[in-house]
Length: 487
Image (cartoon, rainbow, N blue to C red):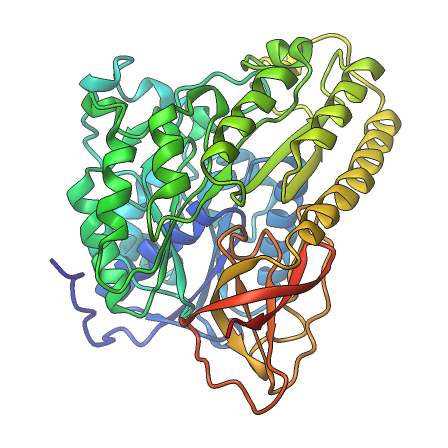
């Protein structure tokens, strides 16, 4: 199967897409782009010339919501019509429409008919924002009974059109989540967990490989749950070797692993299968048992360290990243100290630090023991400083080792305004010369985990984006590495 061909542009109208948030939104935007093209729209490369700007919003935490609002306001300064889609639009509906009358607010349910909805906006037909509801009630509680009537966003790959040309691209394993973390609102607006079938995912991987993609990044709200709704909890372990064998694909990466669901068989496959990146994106969130219980999660510093020991017993050079939340209601100074001790011992490559904030409709928003904002901010600063040091130490540990670098750009192709960023958003210098190329090693997820600068002592490098190069690490700066091609 191949995606449907894009028809010639009949309506002569251009739509610009602006995507905020995570890689899952990137996939959704590419599906929306394909649907719009199929309906005769042209995807604008310059928002300044667009007839409408479609903003795929993020609604996960306060900072993301602020960015979404600021982006919508900036878009409204143009002459284009402004349309809000995505998580924030889905979650807030009429509230967002009332606060931002400049924008038309659409829901996930509008995606299959996005061309008609955009036409309504361009023709000046008034659309009433949807009334948000808890989307967990759309599908049955029992996973094996789920067969959605409407394909979730990002699952209809036949409609997808790539919006970027880089060598890495994401595929959605699944949508939604069945977990009940007390701080998270995502299940309420993304719904219950729904897996895609292996044949669909393999077909999409073959299509992406045909467009020049060399690294497939598997994303979902919880990748370790993949397959449970068709009765196979080993489905991911079976799928990964098949994806790794797709012609043209050189690296498979799995994001969003739930520590409590990581199985020995899955560890073995990720850590040792050729063409599968030995990379574990583990959502620890905290390590103090009392905080984890209030978060409705499982684990402890001891159990998490045991998991990391089991992983590194198979492959000592695996990459590990995580996110942690500090300032959760009831968190004590002793809890923070335990988290610090865990991070010291865990030796992870990248760690994101977030301060707790109430999310409407979540259990944690009703908790007592809320901490003052200055206390939360101080703990974020304290942890962020510490993890910068720890991540830098881990990068320094890699000096002298060999890494396989996927080239993303050569020389001036790495713009100064798109530097590598560490887990806390701290950028690294981007200036390069013709004797250098930049890319990502297996332990570095694109855009989030830093990068590797590949330098040659003599003539210009002859690599192009998509090449895989074995290299020896000779230096580090923060979480970024410098390496020379292996002889």
